[in-house]
Image (tube, rainbow, N blue to C red; front, side):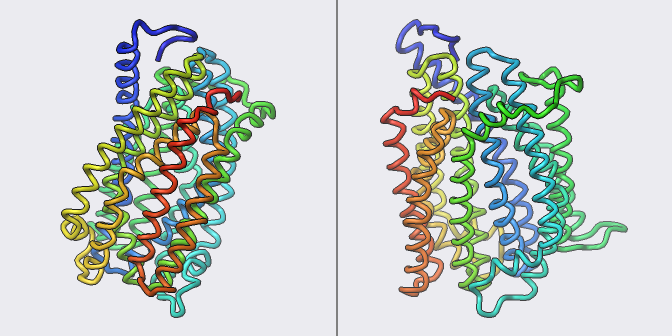
Length: 461
């Protein structure tokens, strides 16, 4: 990224710089997210050997975990946007103050949220199956056990979100990749040991998968904290720093992030409602949903990487008073993600049974999940645009616009249409998936138009 107010040597030089900048930040983030998804994939593959009830229980628990992450968006999104602005303007002390305040608040929130998961795990899982007239007691029991165990690791697994937000805002996407890689390798090893047993360790099944995830996430959190206090961190903290609460800084962080938190609450709430609709369709539908989404996750990892690159580069570009480069960064990231995910979507469409077969051997689940995977394969370019354009607008601090679009797509289209198609017309899980891709195409068009209009270039944070 060019310095504050610096002019490019030529248009071609500027374009080349943008492409290299996007790729330099995107590829570690892509690998990090592939590694991060490895935790979920490892759980589904190994737990899948225990039966469809085990798959459904882990999916329900993780749906609640992902919903809980919504409350942290107010901090992480605001942190990344503000750190990017200050690093783009070479204001390092201000970036460090943002980091201190955000991480303290995140850890405090994680303690409260983790306590809730420990105390009310099984009750929360039972609520997830409210639309099922005869809920599977084994799914409720296993899901509650899983949620309770992973909740113990909340301060570390959720606190690391703040550290990663700081690092990405400063342009460091490699460190989160390395930390995630270490945690994932550890998780896969512990999964095998705790799920199936080894030596003096008895087989634990689903609780073993939860224990493996909790330990690996805790190790990842400790490593990330160590990096934050080391000299390798671009905005490293020190023990001797001033850690008193700074209301003015907190107000800035929450001011940028509050709409993002609302967006996440709306989106996760919509996904939770979508999960309730799926849960009401029975255990086979729940397991098929879990397996098809896990298989699809292999495709949308590039979207995460390019979205993070767009967030950082748009924020840094505005901080350096270069809105032209900020705009080019967002557009290049969106087009790159759409191209790659479109190709991966073709693979999902052509080989659904082979991919689904990696996660389960249940013939009913394979048949239904394969149909669903073909449906979502069509929407991969649209999903890429949604992810990257939302990331670019967040990097500029235009979180309110993303929130409005999310309301329109998730609640205006996905939920209402999913219920109508699944229950009203009796199309089941296939109807729910058709509603999902309708939502993605709508949001991709709205977000691309919002970014192209350029209102975000004049926002003051």
